[in-house]
Length: 236
Image (cartoon, rainbow, N blue to C red; front, side):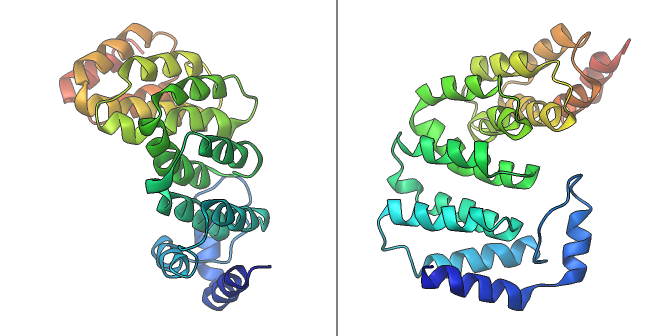
């Protein structure tokens, strides 16, 4: 085991708080393996620990991330995601395979999915737009986190007004999915896309509202003006 992994685990055990672990569990439907650290403490530990490895080759850092994922602890998984984002200036298209492996094999809750997909995957897709086709393929998975990843990987690009037609295509592919965490994922994607393209997203929601699950619809229109919300919710 690399000494940095040993040091992180020792620090996590030192900072572990059963009360925080218990309160954090309430945010998840599935049981989560937790030390019990608040998000700010995880981010601080990630930043300080990354200083010790930032000179290593990217492949070695990804290998260390793999070790963190394998522990099963939520906080270690989040640190792996944050370390991966620290590498963003050196991303190449080949890194998608690393992120895809984590999404398919290691992600076990919505917070891990969103931390990995919002920034590392989202940034990579903005650098290599052809990867959107891989996200569309994710929609056909049986794995709820892979399907959610298809949508939440476009949150940051959507905030910048990018990929609107692809966003609608992914929403179409996930539209009637029965999993509420998938519905919330693509509803969130549409909500953020509406920041730059409100009318287009509103028109999309109106065209689909007869079959769009209520959870997804409510997410999609959450930040729209009252009159548009009323139209979208009418006759539901």
